[in-house]
Each structure stands twice: as structure tokens, then as C-alpha cells.
Image (cartoon, rainbow, N blue to C red; front, side, top):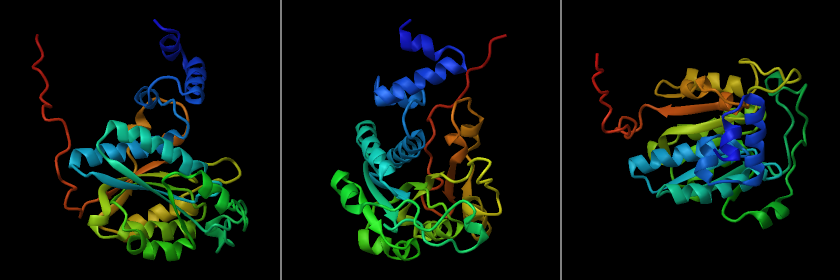
Length: 274
């Protein structure tokens, strides 16, 4: 047994150390690191991989992945890296868009934006520096309430397959989720989502009555045929890190491809011998 394989079958502390080492060093193939969840920004890798996998099964050649709340741009840079790797696995091209005000957080609207934790001006972007580092991602700069209304007209993106929500505020997340009201042709039938500000610590104390969690609740209450739901299989899996508890999937029951079969052709279980 090779040293890395040995570490991976050990108890949690050693597995955790092994995963961090593999993630930082880039040891092994992308698929290997994805399988053992040893990737930096694993949440981004997961939603992008799953979106591309679904697109490939549906015969969709292009998808878009979005990040709401770009700030310094580290998330977009990781998205670019993972897009290159995922495109080698699936016959799907990935477009990347990053939404941000460019000037940091606006003033909180009310208690639902958690002003006891967030302040105006947090996470300001150095647009020139970031653009010099980006290879394919496109920045969508402005108030998300405005840019979400013009996004499809201005950019003609491929159908949206994955979205990382990191807008911090309840009010901004509500505006961002308006993209999910778009025509089915602009969206994948199931969109994989990461909501960053849904767990936090003893300072944020995120709940279902403020912030991103409230925005999700209200979206579901307002939409009969589109629901943002927990992927229970993912949360039931053993694993380290909280990211799996920050993943949701937006189901578009009214999408013409929602009911298209994407499972394994042969799911018959062999008859047990007695």
C-alpha cells in the first residue's frame, strides 16, 4: 500500500492531515482529489463538477457557473482552475461570471442583513488587479438588483448550472435569486448551489429568519414549481469540513428537461442466492 493510500484509511485526524497535504500539493489527478474530497474550495469543485456531469448526460455542450460576491477574486480564480480540469473530463465548455458591486458591501438594509456582523465597505475589490489575473471569467459589476435584470441580455450566457452565493446580506441574496426566475432555456433543470453564509460561528448565529437562509426560505415560499432543496445524500456522507452543509440544489420542475432520464441504464439488482 502506498503512503497516501495508507493515510487515507486511517482515523479522522490522519485522514484530515492527508487531505490537507494533498489539496495543497496538488498530488494526484483532479478526479482522484475530487473523489477523496482533497481539493481547496471543495464546494466550488463540487457544484461545478456536478453541473458539468448533468450537462453531459443531457447532451448540453455549454454551461455557465456564477459567483455572487467576488471581493478579492480568489473564488473566481479557483473556478477557472477547476473549469480547465472539468472540461477534460466532460465534453462541456464552462463559462464563468462573477457578480460584485466592485466597492464592497453596501449599507445593510435592516436586521435581516445582520448589521451586527457586516459593515458597509467590507470586501472591496481591486478591479484592475483582479482583471489582470483572470483568464476567462467575466466580471459583472454593479448593484446585483440591477445586473440580474440585464445579465441575460448583456451577456447571452450558456444555461446556468452552478452558483456560489456569497453576497452576505439577506437583501442582496434575494436579488441574486431572481436569476432563478429566468426562462428554462437560460437555466439547467437542476442547478447546484453553494451558500457561503449559512453556518458561521457564535458571532454570526445564522438562522432561518435572517441572511441567506431567510432568502432561501422566501424563495421556496414564493415559487410553486422551483424549489431550493437540501441534497440529503451529501449531508449524510461521512466527511470532514462544513461545506457539504452549505450545498443546495435548485430544482426546476417546470423545465422541459427536468424529467429526462439521466440514471444508469441497468439498475436491476441480482437475485440473492439462498
